[in-house]
Image (cartoon, rainbow, N blue to C red; front, side):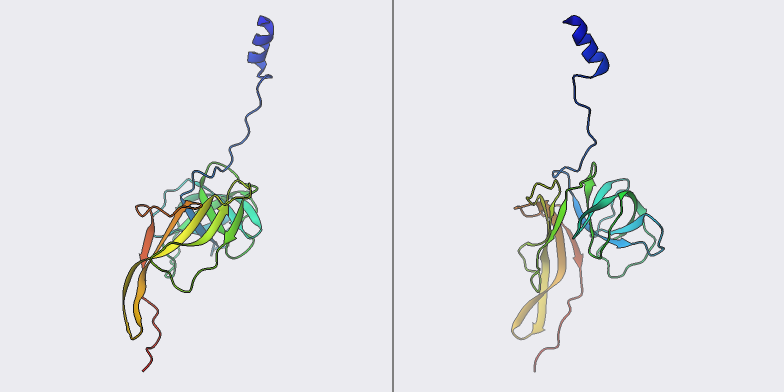
Length: 203
């Protein structure tokens, strides 16, 4: 009996081998857009963050309508100017997979490893944001058929429009990520001010 226990300890034959870490649905902080590198460098993409300066060195899984497309690691803030972007562009290097294959891909993270069964769902937006949270994206990170995380958007501030019959328009958009079925925490949401796109008032 003693010899068999010793053999088990020395060979580790009695315990299963550890498996590589995979993405867990409880660690997501960001769901951000992915765009190609303007310099067309192989294996490099840019992530569009929502107003915050993101730390570097984190892993993100890349998803599009076809599912899991690979994994990237953030490395530095990009030098590319982007007037229409909601926040800084972060340069990321492809570490696994083929990378995004279609426009509209997103990066989800930070994560601890790949998510080969993950899938992405889009929610049809209303015409204009309201004071209530409106889901825009859904992510099933572990591939069990249930949404794990939701990206949502709301109007954080509104101003009088000056048009009869239209009391206020939104001049601040807020974005947040939360577990499916919950609203983003107001303390961690990211907001950006915008100039309202007003149509001419009817005479």
